[in-house]
Amino acid sequence: MPKTAKHVGVCQDPAQARYGFGEGHPFGADRFAAFWNEACNRGLDKQVLPLAARAATRAELESFHSARYLDYVTEKSVSGGYLDDGDTPAVPGILEAAGWVVGATLNAAAGVMKGAYRRAFVPIAGLHHAGRDHAAGFCVLNDIGVAVEYLRREHGVQRIAYVDIDAHHGDGVFYGFESDPDLLFADLHEDGRFLYPGTGRADEAGQGAAAGTKLNIPLPPGAGDGEFHAAWQRVEQYLHAQCPQFILFQCGADSLAGDPITHLRYTPAAHAHAAARLCAMAEEHCAGRIVGLGGGGYNRRNLAQAWSGVVEAFLTV
Image (cartoon, rainbow, N blue to C red):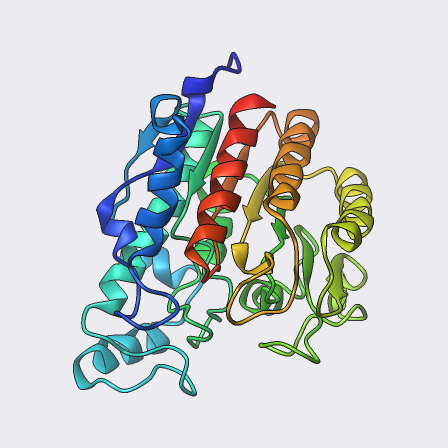
């Protein structure tokens, strides 16, 4: 497919944008509008194709999550309380809202595989903390895990690279595929000794048949673009050696300076650089196939700038 601006899809569907936990919660439903206003100010809305969301089916969700866990979320959405130890409220309708996030990510992956888009970006997605049988860290369903299972089942894509530059370790993905040698995993994050979820040590490199196949790079609090670029070289070396067939890129903006709940100090240039380099690697190894997922980020100006920079890289590389 020719590489033109109009071959980049961006999900603008209000159904996925409504995922959140109410006013005053860091993960509020205003996050999409913050991004999209900045994207429109940069004229990106005129250069991309719209990408629709949909509700993921129960069968699709069960490809990654346990039936017992899905039943638990259904019940808690009525009874209220928290789905975990206090981070993720069981607000009414949260399972349905999370299901639309999963559906948006699945539509993005399907659109890239079928040639509707060369690349795609879903801003309210990348819920990387949810495990196969539990919620965690504002994440009810793990759209990444479901997308991996979808790409394998429906398209025969086996070697999928998951790259994560969110400040928090992508523990739901890591432990969900810890023994899977074909799920390539590279994660730059703030050292878990100082930040939730406390995982992602450098010696966590996979188990069993996957031993030595995963890459976790914890960075100290206060690390900025210099430390990011030094670590990023290791990510590129790892990916080139592994030859992925598809790239899922979680570009959480909570690694930028000024986020209210983290301590890294990247500028938006880090996200743009990572996106551009991953696009180049996708062209080399994956027939161009890459999907970006917004992930975390709780300073609205930061996420607007970081995600808009990712979309600009998707358009220009």
